[in-house]
Length: 590
Image 1 (cartoon, one colour):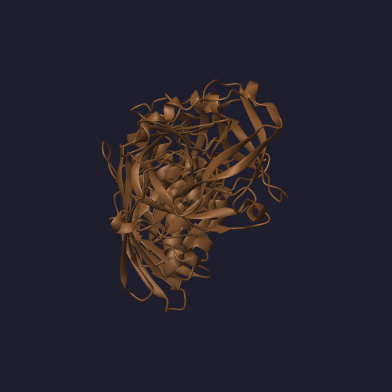
Image 2 (cartoon, one colour):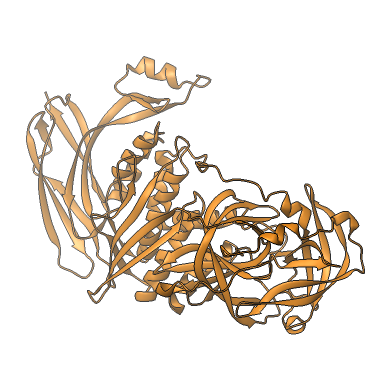
């Protein structure tokens, strides 16, 4: 069973108040052989009729959910079959509304559709959206932050989002998604993730500065649901089912089944029909905004006219390989699950529209790239990535961090906006640590020593970098392990620390802001320790007997042995993404 275009949405403020008085025919009274009519848009904004024949009923297809099987005919349906975008098209028998076209089957030889009974849709019409949206259920740890070290993990995260938003049940769903502001290359890059989320992406125009409104919307009118608006625009389209004053019902099936939502609602204009053996679709473009979708439920969408949803503003300054700067301003839907996916595919589409996306490259987020918070410290995103995975990192990091913030388990975060200063180079700015040395290997606490690092850039001359470090005066005698390397190498070397769980959103933001940057060389010194990590709190330098008791098998609580304790950390700046690692033993004398 194939859910039709799930993004259909709504009507104009001038909708007909008399729609609530339209008589209905309950599911129990619908019989095979009944004939009626449906209403939808095949071209422009004109609502047209098509013929409907009831074939049968499918009771209990879900909890308290039924389905009416119908055959559609008339207009272009003989050559197109059921169109993606017809979801929500009202169906009546003898002047009584029985429901909305909602489901179709791919490769069907006839226009056979599933109709959601109208009484099930009317049951959700009065649901209201709470002032405070839901929070997620994620308690991030340092283990979650380490996913930022792997491009494969980031790609997997985006796949997880798509699967969570639109799990593949019986057959994949196609939802017409009109995309503008991204060219054919950019859309090709973003398409797999949009497909995974249940969309059929189509290049189309948008209302733009003219904010064309179109005529008054009525049951059967085309409508749009904006996910992204501005210089990048992504609008899912469908059909209005029912109107009562400022309330509307649409789709007859869920968009994603997110429950309470707050997404922009627009009128829409059908520009063309795209026949397909698999799934025909309506190509439509959004018109002016007229309200917001407030509920996304199993049997349809509930919208309110004349209200304006809150979106998250994104400002992107892209400096390309030619040195020219391009600025983009757009907004993404404010939703814990949708926002990260929409940010990722928007950045992917824009960058792929402007630059080469395959092969080695360099992507840098300059200082000033932040997620701005209303009630918390801003979250820094500046970093540099180089190599074959630079593109995935440059577009995926911000989306993943946004996911951690919006789905935290402690509080509802207020995202004020996202500012990205992104630079792209076709050559990979990579450098590897070839050798590292100390000016001496025996030192007293409180003394300084010099560290020398030989760095070999990609297709460039070797560089010799030096840095003086101070051995802390309180350092006890013994052997220190000095680790010298890029961010990824030294972070992996510290994995013995185990995951640290922040206790609130402020601590999570602090951890994110302390993440090491790839364009720096880190010099760390540590020593053997008998400490433990107890319930997220580090307890260093315990007597060995106490440590053994705490971590013995069968002990209660979340206890992890910490065999090393950090003594110092110094940073050596670089203009390259640094790879490589060196380890040196240093003796601290009495």
